[in-house]
Length: 412
Image 1: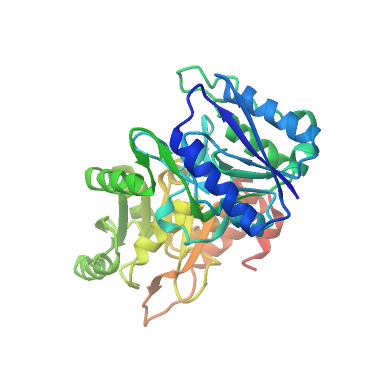
Image 2: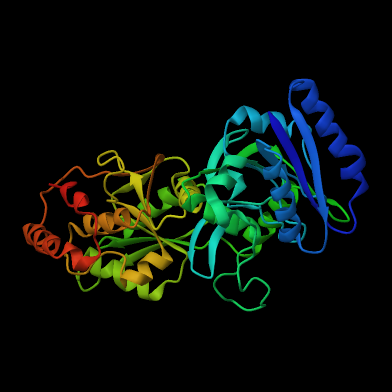
C-alpha cells in the first residue's frame, strides 16, 4: 500500500510539528505496517487550495493509494494512520477545533441556513472512540482513498466557494474543505469522523476540545438554552403539580408554563396562543397528565441538536416513536407552520399531521431514553370530527406538505 502524507505548507512551519510530531507518526506507522510505502509530499505557498492541488496531482501521477492530509499548524496522535487504515473508510477525519474563540469543532452536519449550510457537531454528546458518519470535515488529519478523486474526475480539484473571501452574509462561502466534502457526497461517498482521533491546533497555545467545552459552558451560563415547556390546562393546580415533576426530572434548564384555558377554547387553540406570546428556541407541548422520566428533556434536547431535527417524539409508552403525542418542536418549524399544532383540529390528529410533515422533511427524531408518558385512567375515544378532518386533509396531502405517499399509510 502506498500512502502519501500531504502537507500544504504556509511560509512558516511549526517546529513541534515538523521535527517532533511528523517523525513520530512516520516511525510509529512503519513499526505497525512495515510493508507500507510512505511518501512525504509538500508544497509551499500562500494559497492552501493551490498547494493541495499540486500535491494531489503528484499523488495521482505516482499511483498513490491514499493520502493523509496534515496541516502544519497542528499536533496529531502518532497512531493516526493506524486508526484510519484499520477503519477501511474512503474518507475519514480527525476531531479538532478552531484556533480562536469560541473554538468550534471542525466537524459538521447539514444545517438549515442556506448561507451557512453546515452546522458544527456538538462533541459533548458524541460517543467516545467511535466512527460516526458526518457531512463535513476539515482537511487537518483527513484520510482520503485516491479512488475518491479518480471518481470525481474534473471536480476533484480544491476550490473555495465563490463568495468565500467576501465579508458579507452570502451563500456559497464554503471553505475548500467543505466544498470537497459536499462534492464527495454528491458522488456517493460517505464521510466519517473518528471521535477517538483528536488533534490540537497550534497558536500561542495548543487548542483542544477542553477550550471549546470551557467556552461552551460560558455561553450556556450567560445565555441559557431557551426551551419552553407549555401545558394548556383547565385545572391550574393539577397542571402546576405536573410541571413541578417535569422540572425536577428534566435534567436541563427550561421555562415551564401552565396556560389556563379560561374561555374553554380547547387544548390546541390554547397551545397556539401561547406560541404567539412565548419566545423560545424549542417548544415542548404536554398535557396535565404527563409524567417525565429521568433527564427526559436533556436527552430530547441533545438528540435534536445532534440530529438537527425539527420535531422529536418522546417515548410515551404507547407509540414508541411512531407519533409525537407529546413532542418537542424547533422554533423554525413552528414559525414556518404558523402553529405548534394545526388549529383545524380540536383535540386529536393534529399531532399525527405534524409528525407526518416532519417525517416527510426527514426532520423527525425519536430517542427511547427520553421518556414522557401520558398517565390517564379515564381514557376516551378520539374526536370523530377531528378524524374526519384528518381524512379530508389527507386527500390534499395536507396542503401539499407531504410528498412521500408511503407516509399516508402509517396511521391507517
